Length: 86
Image 1 (cartoon, rainbow, N blue to C red):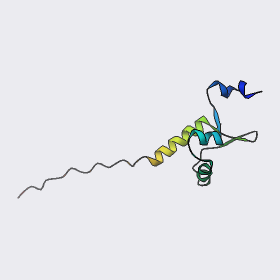
Image 2: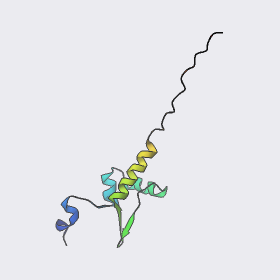
Image 3: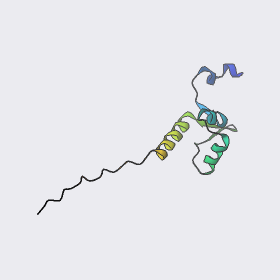
């Protein structure tokens, strides 16, 4: 089957190859493998020898990265208490 007739050509994407994932997320392949080495890459699924990253796994990876970089919530400071003159 030629790529012209591939379901992925119709618009909706279901998975990325690693190179496609890197291009779509604007990271280099070397950065991808650095993240993989420290356990921060998206889950990779092997399908007949091809390594793919599903859309769901890519979305979960983006959420995890966003949570890691989000600033910590600022605790409310107690209101200043005025000292009553005695």
